[in-house]
Length: 315
Image (cartoon, rainbow, N blue to C red; front, top):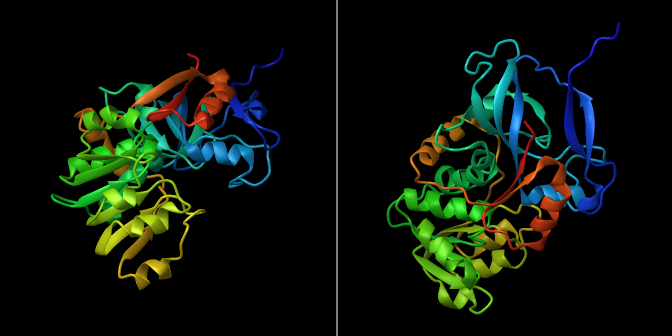
């Protein structure tokens, strides 16, 4: 008599390339180590970095095969030794180092927070990287507050639209760059001033900025310096494509920082309160079935999505 061993499904890739390299594979169910939890994933968020890793542009995980994905929401199925703050049956959301495109994921319990009851798994899975990046940039580093003039580039994207709302929740005045067809969306989220970047050079339209969040990279960094007041702070979330050296910023009498969102269940607990109260709303442009990860990546590469794209796992 043979014994059936529990199995899980993952989206994997055996080579770098376009969305077509993503495929579904079955594997043994992972077992949580000490300090870890096993989460039955209900939804997995897609981030821009996933597309770059898949293509080989940002080979953060070395050579394939590997499983993409950092954001997820689901239900705890088992806990490892020493885990006391989470129990089987708890609904959680969190950011992991990799492997979220899967039906089951093991990761440190400290990476997760309780999912707000008022937020479904799809929107919870879209939140972690976007909100953690915005939180670490604007609150931990910049410490924005009432009256702070904040410039946010790519404001209608995943991180950008979360950053607009977090800045407004802290009382800041928000200037957002986005195409004109995104302006109503951003006004609804609280943006005070909007710049249609294809039609207007933001360096001509924007001045006296205290804190600028660059979510684009390249020449946006040096151009953004022209919008900052003396002593202003430029924060880049594109560490591989800064477009300038920190010394250049300092030479002009301004400050510079790089943000890379780290997993943090502690910060997500604070973010969960904002999500539960509706002060931060994560927009999901499309939620696609797990098996359609390639299609989701195609949508992401088209570059027209507001907010986030999410994969929905089978029951």
